[in-house]
Image: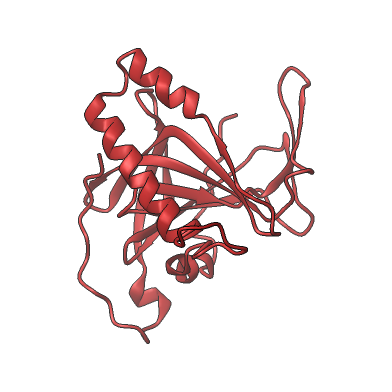
Length: 210
């Protein structure tokens, strides 16, 4: 479940620096330790963004760097990123090629969020969706892992029902608000992320250990 403080409304028209609050983020998977971080980030309203640097085993898309910025909708407990990399060579030599996905496909993750002052703990909660921006339909992933976590007791029924309700709210608000499928996403990437998308690099990058 999410435990996040919601700030008072911030009026529009102020400079980005006055609107954006520096934060730190720790990230990981549900029920697993240790966490990765602390990672530099910023909060604007009900959105947190943070970033890290991928190692040289990743090859970025043309014109991009290996700095990955991830956004978190605090009210829904959903995180998402447009991956900066096109190709990855694993330690065993296996190559992961994201060419067929395209450079403008976003990965969205169901997460839990814990807030401790200006620090946030973000944990992946299995379910993902790939959202392309070129007219293709989205691709849902890892529902079986979510079900397995319920079966083995690592995810309680209370956590599972809360997560599924939040996930449906995300789908309804940001991908398909209408009863029937439509040609465009309702609000994706969410407009609320734009101020954080436009910010310069947050701080000295922390390198992913992979």
